[in-house]
Image (cartoon, rainbow, N blue to C red):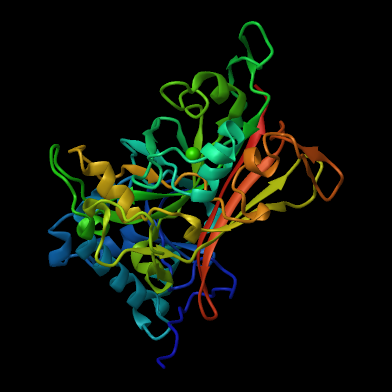
Length: 421
Ligand code: CA
C-alpha cells in the first residue's frame, strides 16, 4: 500500500483540513488586502494568488484565465473539472512533505500560508440562484406524519421525483453571521384571525448543498450520466425556518417568508475529488424512477453530520442531531438532472441544497420540528434547560466530515447565533 500523503504543514489527526481534503474558499486577511481564493490546510489558508503570480496555473486547463484574485469562486467554477483536477494536483504536490519548493522558501511561505485565525471567510461564490430539495425520506415521512397522519405521510409524487422549491439567494450568509429572529404573520389553529410578531417557533434544518460549476443553456437538459461534470463540491447549510409563519403561509404554494429571512452556509467548499474515497453506491430505489433519473452508476457519500446547540447559559455545545449524508434518498446527480430536465438553465455559483437530512433514529432527526415532534416532546439539555424551539442567544452549529484511515475530510462548520427580533 502506498504511504498516505502528508504535508509539511502540521495537520492534527482530527483536523478537517489535511492534504487529502484541500477545500476552496474566499478569504480576506484581517490585516488588510482584498478578498481572494484560498485553500484550507491544517490551521492555515494557502493563498492561491501567490501561486498564480508565480505562473503555477499557466496550464491548458486554465485556458489563460487568472481566477484566484477574484472575491468569489465563480470564474474558477466556470472552468470545469479539468481545471479543478489540475489545480488540486498542483496544490497537493506543492504542499507535500517531500516537495521542497514552498517548504524550503521562508519568504514565499510567509506570504502564502496565512493562519486561519488571521482571516475572515466570505461567501465562497456569487450565488445567482438557490434551490432547496426535500430529499430525505425520513424527514419527509416525519413531517408528513405530523401534518397528515402516518397513512398519508408521503405525497404521491415523493418517490418519483426529487421534490424542491426555488429559494432566495440574496439572504444566504456565510457561517458566523448572527440570525435575527424574523417577524411575520401567524395564526394559531384556534385563533379567529392572524396576528403579527416575532416567530415563536424558530428552527434550524441540517442540510448540505452543492455548488454548480459549468452551467447549461436555457432549453437544454443535463443527462444524468453527465450531471457530476457540473458539480464542483459541497458545503454545509442551515436552512433557518420559522415554523409558525410556515404553517400559516405555505398553502398552496409552499415556503416563502418562513425561509427567506436567512440561510447560512459553511465557507469551505469540499470538492467531489476529495469526497471520492467516500463514494458509496446509491441504494436501490423502489419504485424505479423514470429513465432520465437513472444513472449508470449513481452514488451517495459517507459523510457524518452533527448539529450542536449551545444556549447562552451553557459552557460548551451539546450534540442534538447525529446523522449521515447517506440518509438522502435522491442523489445529487438525480437532483441536478431533474432540475434541468424542463430546460431551466444553470449558472456557475448556483446552489442546490439537499433538504433536511434526517435518518431513521430519533437522534438522527435534523431539525427541532422533528426532534420535539412540533414542540410536544421538548428537549432537555445537560444543564436542565428545556427547548421546544430555538431561543434568543442560542447558538446552532452544524459540522460534518468523512472519516478516512488516520485523516478526516471535513467541512469545518456553519454556525449562527439567534439575536432578538
Ligand atoms: Ca430546507
